[in-house]
Each structure stands twice: as C-alpha cells, then as structure tokens.
Amino acid sequence: MQGAERIVNSALREFGRLDILINNAGNVRPGNIYEMNEYDWDRVIQTHLKGAFAMIRFASPIFCQQGSGVIINTGSESGLGHATMANYSAAKEGVVGLTRSVARELGRFGVRCNAIRPRALTQSVQNLGQTAFRQSQSLERALGKYALGNRGNVRTSGGPEHVAPLVIWLCTEAAKNVNGRTFFVSGDEIGLFSEPDLVCSMSREGGWDLDALDDYAHDRLVADLNDDFGLEGYPELKKFG
Image (cartoon, rainbow, N blue to C red; front, side, top):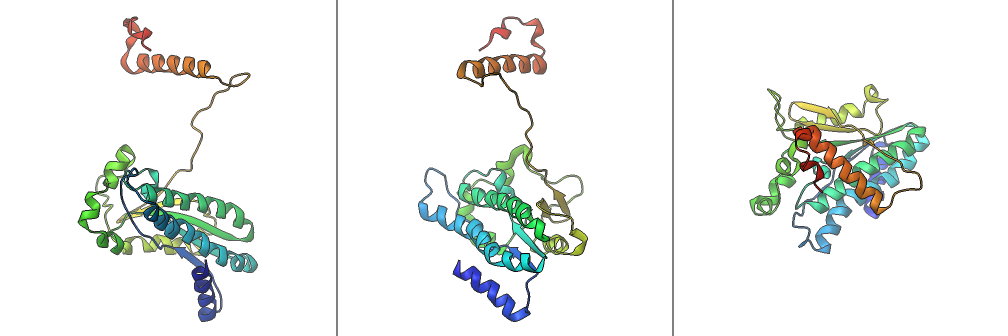
C-alpha cells in the first residue's frame, strides 16, 4: 500500500496531474493446486489483485476530484480456467471483477475503468523457463473449446507492442463511452468479451429440495438424450437413471 501511494505521489510531483493508470504488474508461480504452498498463492494474489487495488485506491480520489481519469487493468484468458495456474487464474479473474466494480462506482465521477486479456510473449513469461512451463498446462489446452486460437488468416501471436495500441486507444476521448468492459488483444486481433449472463433459470413454488432437483435433472437428461441421439425409438434407454 505504501509503495502504491509513493508511485501516485511521484507521478503528481513529476507531471503535476494524473490522468491515466495502467495496472500491468504481474508474476507467475505455476503448480498443481494440491501441491501449491501458501507463499506462491499469496505472492501471485498480492501482485496482481492487491496491487491493482492499491494503485486504484490512491489514484481514484484524484480522478474523482478532477472529474476525469482512465484506469486499465490487465487480466488474462487464464481467468477463464487454467489448470496448474489456480493462483494466477484467481488473481486475474479477480482483476476483472474489480474492473466492473470500479467502473460502476467511479463512472458517476467521469472516471472509466476497463480491462484487457492480452496474449503476448512477455519478458516474465520468457524468464519463467521451460522447466516451470512443463509443470503447467498450456493455455490453449486449458481453455479447450473456449480458446480463440488462430482463425483463418488472423494471426493471434505477437508481443507487447501489439497490445499497447489498444490500451492507448482506450485512454483517448474516442473511447469515452467505454466503461467496465473486457477486451482480448493479441497480434493482429482485438475482441470484446461478453459480460456474464444468466443463461437460464427456473422457479418452483416453495423452493427446491433434493428430490425436486433430482427429478428435474433426470427429466432434463432424458430430454437431452432424445434431442441429441433420437432415442424415441429406444424406450428402454428412456428409463436410464
């Protein structure tokens, strides 16, 4: 917290004002969740999530007072679920949740807060070394069908220099109405992530108990089997469960 306060004060001393905050500090300590120690968990959470909070904590009063300011937080696709990277995934998805909350809270003061999920070969990744990478699951494999991958002639690999233009653009007046959103950026491609949505819901008078949930799950399974495999002609399979 003291370090964050010093950074903000140094910016004010050098430039006389504060307009943009980009939270980009990070570290990686991969490992199986059943072997991960407290130190590796805390160090990653503190750097990514608490670090972003600390910087916003001391920059936001200045932004609110002047009625303007832009905050860009660095998340990751790993936040979508990345085996052997539980500390990193939790920290990065926490950053996205922090982004949404800050955007809603500070938007009334004219302050914007957005997040990026970049994919780039950074120095920290290179420094991690091949031994550590062998202990972790690749992002592409972890994300499975949710991985963006390479589509057509769109090249999605690249370095930090391919990420910077979008970050800068989000800080300009051209993006003045963009707040609380999360972007993908890598190589030749940029994209906008959807926001979490309740895909379906159901209600039952008096609430749900275990029997009611079991009955619904059984009926839903049978319906899915019928739809997916055309089991209308196999009544014996309809009794499955």
